[in-house]
Image 1 (cartoon, one colour):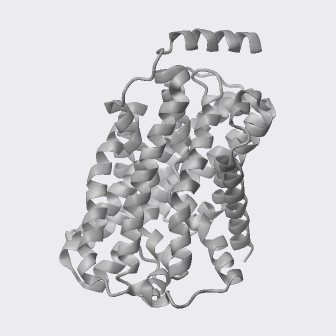
Image 2: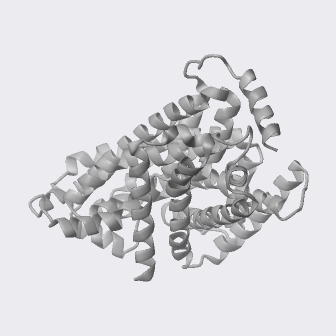
Image 3: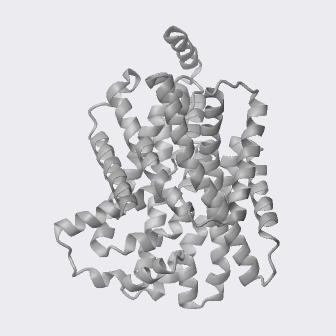
Length: 426
């Protein structure tokens, strides 16, 4: 088996380009696709969650944002790249750790991502319903019909293939970036100090560490795009062969730099406008920062733009998470012993996703937030800990050992998981 795998790798490496080519349009498309998966609906709640702890914890989180996200996603990308040509994350786990571990990780991977897909289905339906009712003053169609049409529309993009998904997401990123910039700049004349009122309130080390401990998971998952990393790594290996690690690191670096700069500018603009008490009020009302700002300023422009921005954000994230969820479900079906054709497998997965997402979006249950929290520790384990464990144990990843970033990623992963488990136990 190993000889066959090595033979495949040798043929693949021989076909790879001798030198890394210059940056191209496909690299830009992937950069924006990664940005699009990470920066979605969660971004609209980040100013509230990150700003509640006060000025100094927010500054520390801002400094940690880039290394936390870049090193973790680079580690997961390298893990997928360490496998055979064309192997996705579930197959690489099986290759390195055995069939049983592969089946377990595939199961966890699916159940970590799929609930988030359901949440986006509900959020998308609620956003469009509210927009029709309050902004357009149109009686929305029955919820079952509306949710079916919306999800079917997104799955129509999915049916066009992975590259179509990434291109659609990269196109949707542009208006979202413009919208975030517009809102952040619009708020500048309204800056009144906001969170700066807490600058003099330097928390004692124990309180600061406790605040950061509970806030780190918010930052981690606000920038999370692990569901699309497997497809990204597979495509990089197909495109660049032995140079895939170098080019994927470049793409990840630029994508994370863009998302961190954009989001932090948006976050600081919001928290310099709103006081900690107003942020707490927004959290109590369970509103996104856009909805709260629209009510706060009573501004028709923001009131009309907010649901449109939310629609784009949720649609982008839905498409990105669909790639990961479908990958996990396909892995489960194949590992169950069934071997349908690739086309039949795509249809089975799409039909399952459509039916379940439609049912949940129609029922509009309130327990989905809890499901997302339950999936959180699993995502943190797959994103932070599994690649670091592989670096220690897998010969194909031995060249990455001894790097300080490995210790940092492991520590952040343990902090994120322990904080999420603590929140669940409260």
